[in-house]
Amino acid sequence: MVGVSLPVITLVGATATGKSSLAIELARALRQAGQPAEVVNADSMLVYRGMDIGTAKPTTEEQSGVVHHLIDIMDLGQTASVAVFQELARAAIADCRARGVLPIVVGGSALYLHAIIDQFVFPPTDEVVRARLTGELETIGAEAMYARLQQADPDAAAGIEPANSRRIIRALEAIELSGTFRSTLPTWTYALDNVHQIGLQIDREEMDRRIAIRVEAMWRQGLVKEVRALLDQGLRDSPTACRAIGYRQVIAYLDGTISETEAQQLTIIKTRQFSRKQLSWWKRDPRISWLDLGAQPSAVLALIG
Image 1 (cartoon, rainbow, N blue to C red):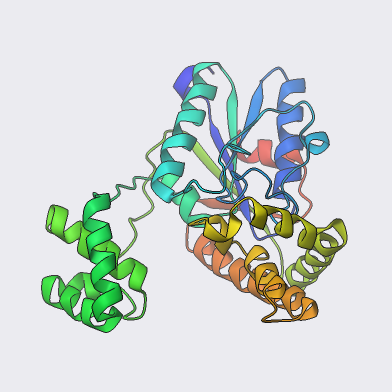
Image 2 (tube, one colour):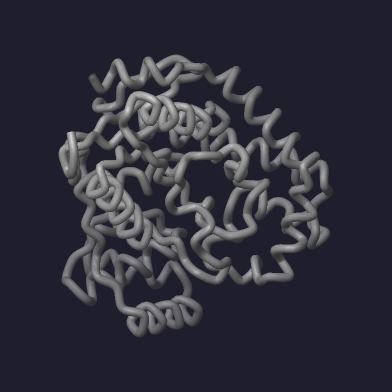
């Protein structure tokens, strides 16, 4: 098959289940079978240059011979929003298909993957309106802004936590610009054709063990040193990168608010919580075919025919 009829394979699963490694092995297996394939990253933090250890970014050696899209494409000061990521990833997928290359999308961020492959329209945005609303938030507080949202759109307010000031501002911005804001996510409806979602399943105990091992390895590899260097490059002021799990905890350690041991343990805890949330999201999607941990490329290929 060529052009837009080529499949889009997505690999999803919890942290430390080997998605990136399987994607690389799958791309090599496809190439050996005469079908070129490339990897499209769907992890929101792998886009940032310099954020390597804490994101478990595939090294140049690990990527060897397999083209990867959307890795190391942004500076820390840029914002890898869902809307921006959707545009970039869909363009990469379209480019692959136009060249007769099968795209393998590797997802660590469930929301971002959902936005890439499904019908997902974003509310309008305006920097001037948002800046004004943010200023009002700082003046009168989240409670008053939430009350304003309840008055403007009770249904939208019902789907947002009263303390979530970021979403309150986003909702008020969208309502001012378009008259409405949808606080719930769209249903599972593909925006792309011929999508095959493959999940790597893992029991909770094994997932927790793997996450602890990975975080401990990050510390040995120099995560603290990496974060210290990134702070000199503006990590603290980054609108999205500074919120990454591991980086936020190391920043707290370097600021002296927690110990290094606490930073490491908090990173493990937060990563486990995040993985459970991601798995809960994916398990609700009936379109995903699940394979056991350690599945080989042949198992993936068998599922897509």
